[in-house]
Length: 72
Image 1 (cartoon, rainbow, N blue to C red):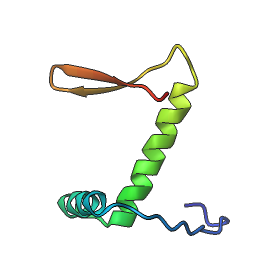
Image 2: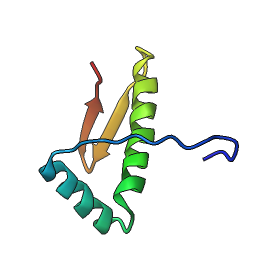
Image 3: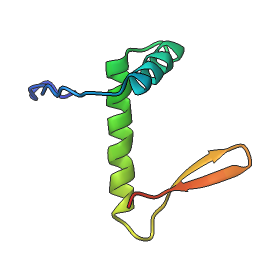
């Protein structure tokens, strides 16, 4: 985070099952839920930016399987 920026607070209400998944993922990745959410938001912003260009695609490759992420 840039030093000249004031952090903003945002309260979020999540269903229990979703928060439990975040807690598990955070533990598995040796991080906090808050840091995991920050990373997800940054990734989401990249996906949204790529989605603006009709000639670009955001792909996820897992082994031999490739999926395109499309935001409608």
